[in-house]
Amino acid sequence: MNTTAPVSLVTGANRGIGLETARRLAGLGHTVLLCARRLGDAERAVAGLAPDVPGVLLPRRLDVTEDDGVRALARGVEADFGRLDVLVNNAAVNYDTSRRAVSVDLGEVGRTLDTNLFGPWRTAQAFLPLLRRSAHPRVVNVSSESGSLELMAGGTPAYGVSKAALNALTRKLADELRAERVLVNAVCPGWVATDMGGPGGGPVEEGAAGVVWAATLPDSGPTGGFFRDGKPLAW
Image (tube, rainbow, N blue to C red):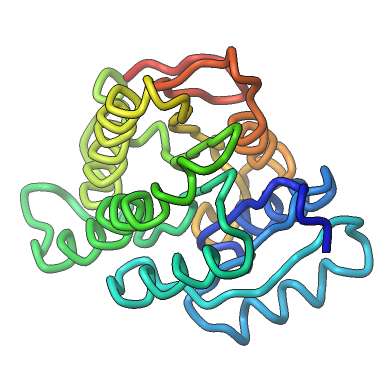
């Protein structure tokens, strides 16, 4: 294994945008930890990609809602690599288009926040010591235009609020880590034809391109921004 290759971790990477992001980063020569809630799903995803990808793909189990599991994986990455160069917080749930803020069950909202907000938050906290050891640390929070306050309308309450909160977390982390050269950005992949996005969206390759762009920014690149296709989005 090339110990000088960038080490990237992608959550929720067994399908959709996460899977394509992992494939592209591995294609760029990264060692990619492809994470899924079930190890078998991660292993099958790696097996499906490995014949066509020149980089290294390693399956890992990670449920971002489990404190102990997140910390255990961080210890494993430290033992194996001593650092982490790129963290892509992609795992998300519950695109609740049939719900309304006036009536949605708040237990459902809480479960959504646990994955979509607190998941990236606890993962960033756990891996920050390893990111600080990187020469070019990057954090990418996969967000959504649903979380744009300027563009927000009714509907999709749990998902939209969770992504608005994720955007706020992006700004907080970016400002606090600016002096340490950790670039932290939020990326909206747009409407993509995935299991969550449903039919009618664009190809997953296009959605993942903006995520990979943020994961591979030069040191002079932006931090604390919200982007789609490499262009700023309204907060």
